[in-house]
Image (tube, rainbow, N blue to C red; front, side, top):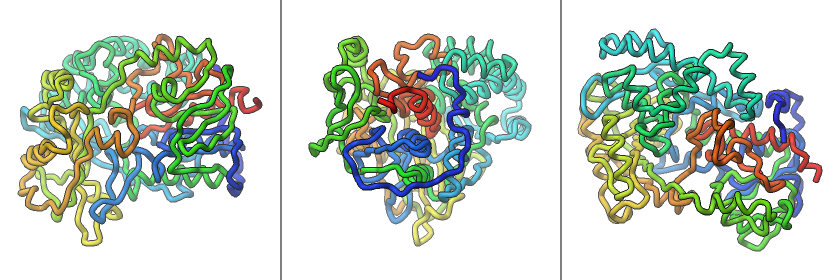
Length: 535
């Protein structure tokens, strides 16, 4: 296992010599299960390093929930379209994604923030001074608090983003901290133990600052911001001053499509519509996989970019006796259920927000109060939803005309959070998503509902059915870099399990949440630094 080597050393630039994909074979150097963005990125790095890789995907297309797809003759994103953390990694340059057609449009302002309980929508910009000028106009009483917040939070955000670009070992984390001259380290330690809500209240008094940060932090992770240990979720405003929010032209799926192109150009092999039945182990180490159709494929390395619990408890067969504790730990772990839903609507006219008269090209975060967010988390156990849930609203086709319909109609995207998988009604028989549309229409000056041509709701049950997500949930790693020191699940930060040849990558591993990609890159570095490819 690689402890100290810089990931950048493993991926030092070399002239690319694409090899044509050879004929299908039943033996490979490595098999990757799941072609979400982390599985794709891991596969592309391995293939470019000369590893003979087979990438398996159960669906007919790659990308998972980071993909885009046609709807109503437009292009819609499976999940939200804002990319920030991916752009803080070397992935785009190292995999040559621009050469395969990837291009971004920067989003400015990067976000619009609004509270359900009070007015005063404010624009967030990448530039700190411009953001403070906006706050001085809308919330003058919050300017001093925001300055204090940025002074405390920005060094932590820089440290977290830099740490994500290395395999998270203790020595690597210390090396990153020293490069930053320890800036942010004391607050990183303090904030990691505190609740995000307490931290945000210490800087802000208006909910449109504190609650909107909680929505895009702990709430996106599926937990209450009142919980101790969620403090790094308070970084979300600061992170937008470190990285730039952008959107891939053509939709979020432009990233996964170009990563796939990079993978195939390097000689990798992809099989879609290929569902894994089991991971084959000979009682000592991994030897390959068996598919649902009966095909057996051999490889000394198997990398799962899927749910870790499904990987270790359902798929893994005849593991070594020494792994019994690991498997039992995951067997008894209570799996988290889905809590996010998304509405895609085709609209004939672009509406304006009541507060400020702007068009919601950037994502508008509409937040319940912190107390309400906490109540919404506890309602999940009852299968119920807040009267006014947190919404992330945007019209991606304002900036990206390639996603519009041939008639020029636009796409309205609305994400609703804390919408439980076990809803107290049947999702296919409720009008609850329609209620979110009605609530969202209150945000606009124009009669939004009159301009909807067609719409759909993707609720947790559909994420389970259509994307093979257990209980409609894409497990995300809510821990920070300090998890390397004390984590109940060390395989999520090491990427390597105690079962020789079995590795993990994906949103469940560090770093998780959103389209980040550092996990796939780091996992590839661990595999390349191991001795399994010689097995």
